[in-house]
Length: 137
Image 1 (cartoon, rainbow, N blue to C red):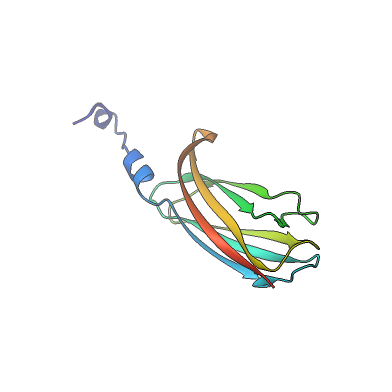
Image 2 (spheres, rainbow, N blue to C red):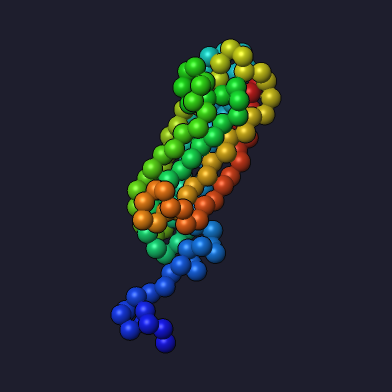
């Protein structure tokens, strides 16, 4: 019996740091970009809290060189803060990814990382990453 058991506190730190905290699903609309044109696709991302505890959540998206989150393709990193996500709750995200005239055909990577935080967004408890391939034809 620990000292925390006397005050009714439950230690959930092992559950939050050892398990995978999120389940991520994604899709592109349209499913590919056209090379050497100013066009865009929409990344629709669903992040689900897979734990039994509420988590302060943020998502960081990084795209390869040649793509961007604005029409000039200068911004290649975007952070979205969801706030507290309840147990088994899902949050949806819709982000537009742009190509430019210099975007060549090929496979480009989009790195999606979901972070769980404690105290504030500067303190990271756990994370889950996924690399997504985006075709440019």
